Length: 92
Image (cartoon, rainbow, N blue to C red; front, top):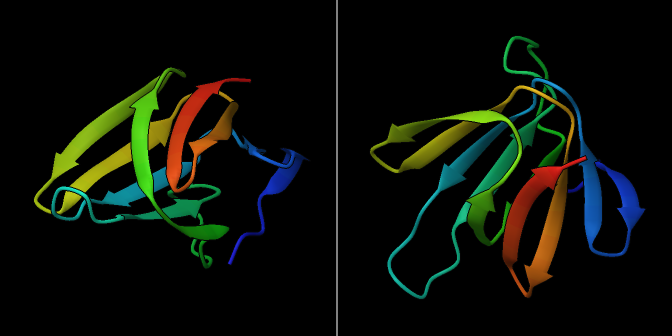
């Protein structure tokens, strides 16, 4: 499921205040990224992607969790697929 606004084939727009819940797996296994438009809005996620979040270069707050982390964006950003199932978040 991916309802993010595409920029091109490997990049998607992330709105200001988006929340990304990252579930990490064992070394070598794909994790899970669940992306919400806003942490305060009570609606289903905009996207659920299998893969690994490699880095966050945009203005964001990262909160460690037992199963991964929660990334709360402070500005609009771009989700880029750097290689198969590998993602990073960069400035818009």
